Length: 490
Image (cartoon, rainbow, N blue to C red; front, side, top):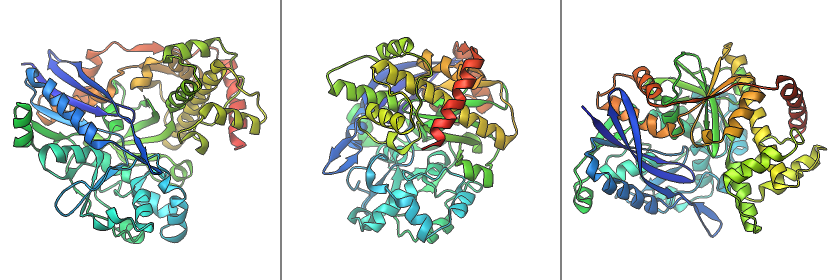
């Protein structure tokens, strides 16, 4: 019997609604709504436009009406949150993780309140200023009136679930991005909250990923003229939806969820937390069925997206496909940057920051657009290799395949560069991994699919992946030595 669900995937730059249909042992997707997720800057603060996003979510429900869906699930980016007052009303717009309010907060917390080693020992999460813990620390330090008056905190997918169902719950995948979840118990760490001395709003109750938390509120169903479908707290963190859709047959695999951010890692049965993983700042995020994804966050296609915005401001507008062609024509291995350097994480003139990095490290300056894009491609590919070597070191495992999923998987130049730089077979697809994973978890929740292993088999049968084999090993290995030399100097 054919079953259909609505998967709503809210990325850091775009959102979409997709109908997922399970029929004949395969899942097919049909996009019914796509929209921009554009942050708004006001008086020095960068916000998410959540009410506009909720308007688009309702449009997705409206357009899903002819499909007779049995449930809906929402995934979003991690770490960000909203605050509700004592009446359950939203207090202002949630602030964007790229906002500068957390600058210096990690150093402040580690210096005055909790040891870095203990914080990592409990959470296993990469320590980054954008994490929820440090956002709350910044609010409290600045005596923010919203946090002082707030009754409850909800992460972004939980906020939209609350708007739809009236239920205020979270699940481990999105909660683990906060740096307040115990990686082993999958419950809030009150030790961290007490040590940081957070007088924070109440944290939501945690339910297992893939829980039906309620039904669509009657007033929304009436407004849209739709049925009161089930609302599922699947994996609220988009990365974990994408990992759930990795079409690997083998138990030990590498994945690269490639988009605005690149998340590169492997799946483990439980967290791997020790001095080495702390030193390398590897993150143990909680995935579906309680699995752990050991990964590292890498600034990804944001570098090309933000560079393109800069060139448009300068009156030079190119499509991403045109930028890819310009990169192919540029000289290889001319200059490199460290994509994880702080100067590349904020909005601004990325091409100029790249030239400044190259000047500081004594490399030729990439002047043309093609040279800048080529520099980004090769630097990202070498960063992937660096992280793969770290993961192989701490796990003691060797991997045969790198599974590249997400929107960036459409970029065949980057896929081939990853294969060449890492010396590994790259299997590309699905591009809509997050939506596939979101849908698969819903089908598991509705007992149409047994478990994650069966879901991955169904996804393998539903797609036609592309494979990229490594080439020119000697040239790439020699260039990698130069990449490590130049990036070590910063």
